[in-house]
Amino acid sequence: MRTTTATAGQDLPNRVLVEHGRSGKTRVMANQAESPLAWLVRRGKISLRQFAAGERLRSDYQLAGTGPRMTMRWDAAPTAKGARGAPEAADPSSAQIAAKKRFEGAVAAAGPGLSDVLWRTVCNGDGLELVERDMAWPVRSGKVVLALALDRVAGFYGV
Image 1: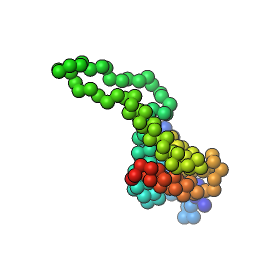
Image 2: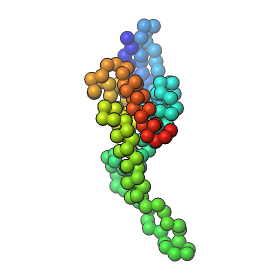
Image 3: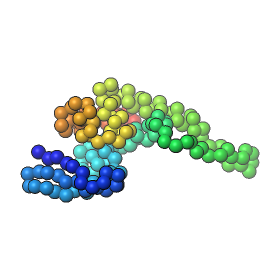
Image 4: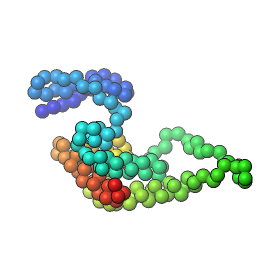
């Protein structure tokens, strides 16, 4: 059985982890800035298709602005109109509305049982171990559930 504990400050982007396994202790460097999806695809646990679908879902989530805001909005100042002015930019509100519709459609395509793991892992950035523990799932079942959800999202996006 392997357990992982942090031995350095948890606010650092890289931290040293100690894995306790059959062969004793092993020191491992973990990049905390890496997303759970990037970690899974780099280790061959999900396919590139599933990774692309997850990244599109995360992009739509962020573009829709459905997450909590930490600071005030700093939108660009209005541009001059007329022949010498800059071309009209896309209306940010319509882009947000379209992203929110895509996000809601992708989550609906995943289904009610799979949307929780999608939101927590892809959008919120929670690790699968935390999701499994919070949802009272068996150990290592989160990868299977997340892979199923990402397959459905990939079908929705046409990836």
